[in-house]
Length: 399
Image (cartoon, rainbow, N blue to C red):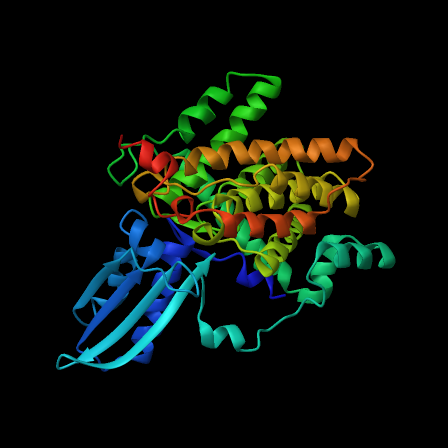
């Protein structure tokens, strides 16, 4: 299992798979084929179906167009077997193709193809399931964040400190921005209004309003192309920051405890990424919002001193109760229903934490089994509901 550095990535929204990944691919191809006098990039499957709403072409052109004229070809009806998010980069000179590269954006800003699939990865975690990790923790008298430190080394805390700083900055920007989000749906930002209204409430209503505001702040910044952290993706990037920020500001948790909660969240997200998928184009929104909710629930339970079993239980509920969630963005934009889902998932993460901490941690369905079911469910899900904007809410909106 790879480092958390490959999970938490800092970049610009609105989509890790449709914006960050293609931009990274364009940067690599420009470096590889710098002698070309023009470029052609063909987008396949989900990338082509929702790429315009996700600013895929804008991300690619921002890299290649300053170097040489670039043509974008859209082939939404062609789905390559390796992954739904396929790209073919071609470098041309005098009208002749001098280099080509087929690559796939597989979620969370990561890139892969047949060559990289077989290439050895830098795996720093000896265990790849929560069952194995939990057994190790119980045997050694440790908890999940200590396992992360054992595998990553002490410098992981500097990395997570930077991740947390960016998350907090994104929340503050989102709370202070107003207006309509780009893209044509004319969706108004709500975060600042929710936060202002929370100041006039008390008790549980004020608490709920604030966590909504924080999640909306991040999701709205992402939708406008602002800087965010993939957690585990751009489309679900508001859940973890909102959950932890709410607890940090309301409970006065120290920064190191917050970073330990982030490490715990990352560990659970990493297990899902390794054994299933965090790509909406591959398994639907259960792999984005569902995984984010599980990660946030684990982080919250860690902050409240949960045992390894209680933390696993919280994460299991966060994912289990999002099984089957479709990815059907209206007009291909990461706005409807994506933004609201971030807010609701953050609140559900707190609920999962409460439920788990009230228990003794014993539960029938293990987290790893839910991860396996999520993968099966995603593979069984028609492509209409996997980030193509051809079914569900995306279809009904236009009827």
